Amino acid sequence: MKVTWVLPGGEEVMADVQTGVNLMEAAQANNIAGIQGECGGSLSCATCHVHVDGDWLSKTGEKGDFEEAMLDMADGEVTDASRLSCQIEASDELDGIRLVVPV
Ligand code: FES
Image 1: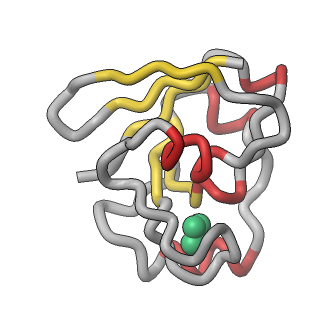
Image 2: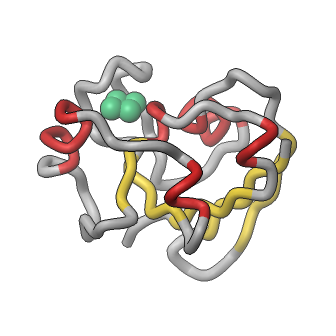
């Protein structure tokens, strides 16, 4: 499936991501600046914060309570579209998803 990251300067990076890989790992594999993933996806750093673009948000499922709490510590503006990208798994349903890296 394809994922597009929109970087703070407006540049877009599109990459093929294997189904089952979480989107923080996919960002690391593609050197997306601003997505660190310091905790390795264990939901304890919030450095994988993204804004899910438009209608894609509803397809990513519900945030868990713990993810919600961790988002309070995230860098960048936290909005209704905020997710921790380590909690989103690549799937055919998300093919084409756009993730905005928060400023
Ligand atoms: S990588 Fe640490 S919370 Fe997502």
